[in-house]
Every structure is written in structure tokens, then in C-alpha cells.
Length: 212
Image 1 (spheres, rainbow, N blue to C red):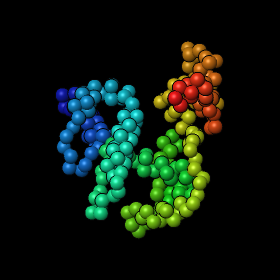
Image 2: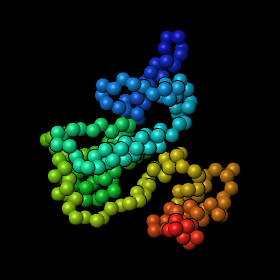
Image 3: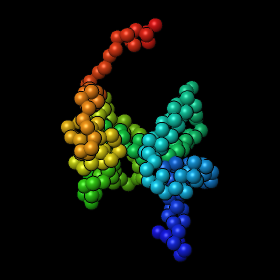
Image 4: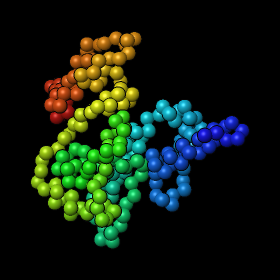
């Protein structure tokens, strides 16, 4: 995607649009672009390596806490809507990934999805006559269930994806792939404790300091 003069201005414009409307999206009529985004787009190599997932996740969580504090005394009666910034789609489908009864009631596997696609792309919402599901439907399907998958285990090609975004050796049951990286017994031990579903770490002296 190059201009007639061989520059990459068209590609930069496409990246700018994606970052401002998806990753760092705001209201539909918002026009402000953060200086950081403009600087990042000017260096495409930086854009390719920057952890945008963590960036937009922190942005979403900050807004969620702000919303909680803003409506601490109750929701307004004028049906006011609130726009969350950033790439909120993963948070929107997280409950359907972690709560089996919701996934079975509202999600279907996508047969046309490629094996190496992220998990969120391998499922789609069931077809309805409306544009979404009413909260009453979700509450009814949820019922009193307490079955929640608090730890989503990688499946299939997701292990390869994890190796690209995590430090080597931090994925359980997968050996180090880089021969130049030496295994560290201490680090491997901590990783197994932290990754273990019910693993707990307790330092009595630090606990006593916190209690005081």
C-alpha cells in the first residue's frame, strides 16, 4: 500500500484509522487524536511491536472503574448511555467464554474460521430477529449457576500465539523452543506455581506487615 512516489503514506493512514477508530476508539463523532497515536503511526516498525492489546485493555479497565465510581449512587433515570473507549469486544464476549451456560445459550462455533484464528473469532452469536440479546434473556439463562471457568486454557494453535506474546517457558507443558535460552530451575519452578490453577504463595512476614 504505497503512494505513487513509493512512500508508505497510505499504509500510515490506514493504521491511523484502525488505531483511532478501533484500538483507541471514542465516540462516533469524536475528532480528537492523541499525540501518542500520531507519533506511533509515523514509525510503522514501532506500531508492529507495540503491545496494543495491553494498551487498550488498561484503557478499558480504567473507564470501567470510572463508570463504577460515577454511578456509585445509582443509575440515572433518563436512560443515559455510556460509551466505552478502546477495543471492548474481547470484554463483551468474555462472560460467554468463561460461563459455559451462556456460551451454550448464545454462541455457536463458526465453521468457516481458520484454525490459527484467535478464539474470539471461532465463535459467533446465535442468529436472532433482533440486533442483540436483552438482559432479561441473559439473566434467565444464567440463573443461579456458579460454574465459571476462571482460567481459560489455550487450545490448538493458541499455544503458538502465546509463544509470540509471552516469555518463553511461561506456558505450562511446553518446552523452550529457543536453544540459545537456557532453562532456569528457579524461574521454571515459580512459573509452575503461578500457572497451577490452585497454586498459592504465602509469605508469613509480609502478611503480618500488611495486617499491621
